[in-house]
Image (cartoon, rainbow, N blue to C red; front, side, top):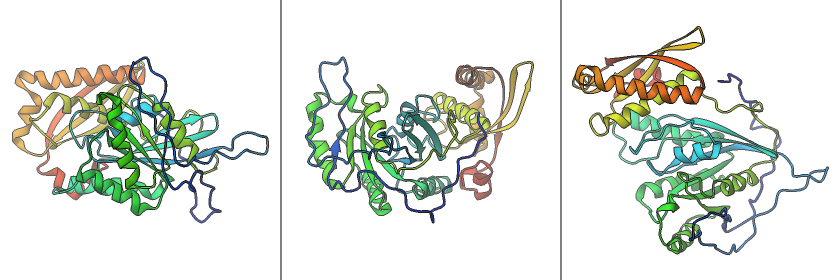
Length: 353
């Protein structure tokens, strides 16, 4: 895992030229060709998005910037981040509010560098300190963004979608709408009214139907985002993948396997902290603690004769071996920290505040 830092940009510098800001109405990005008999419906654009300007050497100018993925919980932002980057950086479960942190995934293209920012889902009625911290993380992630990607679910719109759209409008940043989960819509013509309705809600630079799970039309979204970034040099070194360290990625993988294993039994009272990393004889040894916020949750996590904790450890170890390309030994302990999700000090210790 690279420890390199991005080159800081000073907001007082000469403003960087943005692409496509003059377009008052949305353009629907053309989907990729697939083998399916039904294709995503085409919508004729009312205004062409401005093409990237020619450089002095008759080439496209280099563009780079931050593209923040925002939307309501469980809309598929983390799956989309992984699809856009081409590697698993953000954990994915069927449970809402799985993502708790700001995670940057970096894509290197021939004429652009995109730093995608995965954020926690914006949700209403945030009663616990953890939920309020997640909302703040999502909101403050817009501060460094050059472009917003509003992720919605095909043919569905809720009050939490409206909340996310409000944040988009308040930011004043250019925005692209990514309509996710289009693979669930049959026939595809059902998307047309939804696309028209979404285009009328905001002056999006583009509206792109995608399936993050099937990687359908993801390349069209990636190229559309790159075309709307400012003209600027790269921020990260070539080959750098994320701003997150190894300990974070290990802890998140353990938390993913815990969430999948526990299902509804321990909803949101779990956190994982890597306490020690040691390498010897080509093997990485990891000591990690699983925090629960009530004493009664501890035996649920451990399971009868420790079998559940063994399954979680085995699943996390196999996934990490494949992801990191190295042998890994995992030691897990379950500890109780009463009401950690409402404890500001605990949230800061876990990197959640």
